[in-house]
Amino acid sequence: MLERLLATGSEHIQLPVGRKSLLAAPGTMRRLRAELARIQPDIVHARSRLPAWLAWWALRGLPAPRPRFVTTVHGLNSPGRYSGIMRRGERVICVSDTVRGHVLTHWPDTDPTRLRVIPRGIDPAQFPRGHQAPEDWRTAFAAEHPALQDGRLLLMPGRGTRLKGHADAIELLARLRGAGEDARLWLLGTREPGREAYVAELEALARERGVLAQLVISPPRHDVVHAYAAADLVLQLSNKPEAFGRTVIEALSVGRPVLGWDHGGVGELLRALYPLGAVRRGEHAALADAARAMLSGPPPMPVTMPYTLAAMQAATLETYAGLVND
Image (cartoon, rainbow, N blue to C red; front, side, top):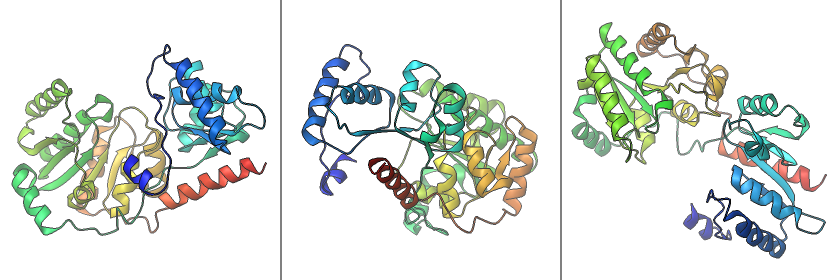
């Protein structure tokens, strides 16, 4: 995002705030403190644990009045003192009610009045309702992935990690095909450098279940909105609760039905926007039943999409203003 930020007037100061080294941390903290003393900002906003620690110590060395400190908890961080820095903001933004509950459960001495739930959001213009992929894209897609043509396309976007639940998606594919459904499965974004052994494991599972010929495992790509438009059903089957679940709102914004395990941020979104798409985790027969029902006649899409980028930005700026004017 750097080039775009600079073009719109932001100032970028490069510091190794993401370098997870305790040896480098004191020097980085001193440089950060010097920059903060120069800029004299109203707000310092940290979104990750090591940067939050650096900002915390840098601010403590500044004379009063100091900038106000805000943090955003983006994930279900492991309990403990290191992760606990994220709840030390004077305002703590949680990206979902799931995250808010996680913070209060694992750091029960957190002042709940500091917490603000501000869900992540998308730009509906980038994921417009009823979007259709261009004809040249569809032609290229058919040539690139003939195994995904003619049947009902299941799409599961996600990194090549076991936590994303790819094995559950392959099991769903096998159950659907065993019930006579001509389903095909596209694991988009799963084939990544360093994940070769995992991809081979998934292919072996698909071969064992008799669905390898109807499976495509592909690298990440930037035209995911076209992929959503091409899909008959979008899956979100992470076997570990996620903090939010952006793919749910992206797909629903385009107008595609979504099916996922009912836990964490994904379950929270599905219950709010598309409740028939939420299935109790691990119930594979129920998942297959729900998939068949959606493929035969998907439930209506949400009339409105409250999880927008504009709503997220407005709530964040309101949080800033309330803190500065406090």
